Image 1 (cartoon, helix red, strand yellow):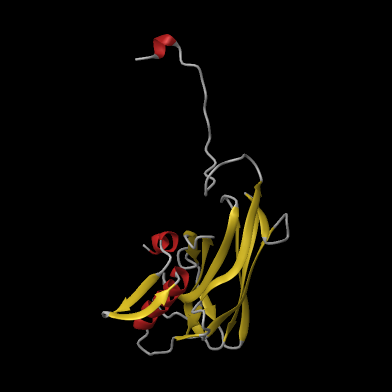
Image 2: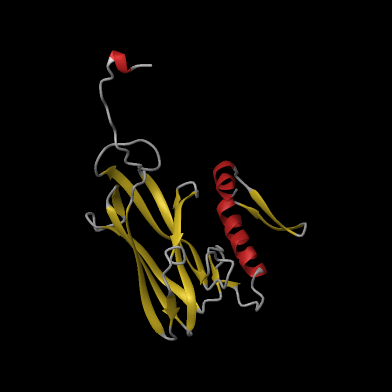
Length: 206
């Protein structure tokens, strides 16, 4: 349970076949874990880490070059809860590659995954051509509680980054939810219930 590790632990250890691979802060070690499991599924040994923070790895045949989020009303990355937001992912392809997936994950300030989805689950066919640039946009109301969040973005095939991981970019962008557009609520998610209230007559009671 990676979310529990991020929330409850100060330090974690990553083991591979009984050998300590890394020890340190949960977020850094979990990034290494995500890289390791992608690497173990990389039969052609193309996957590499791009930087020392371990938050960017893949084959880089298709690469994420920028991720940004803006509220439609605020036109910034400080967004009201319930406001419609646009997440834009800029991508460059170095080769022709078909049947790819573009995914996002929203995480809170503790590093917990609060929402994730991708084009595979939405049944969108994504093909890339060599030396072309692309823009993928996710548009949705941010029905989440106030706080600071980050976005992780990924390019891979099928439903998870274990298949042909071209690029995994953790902490690709930051944003803050401040204030509420609509009814006030408490907690992490905004469920928007309908409420019914009526008088019950005594003879209706059993």
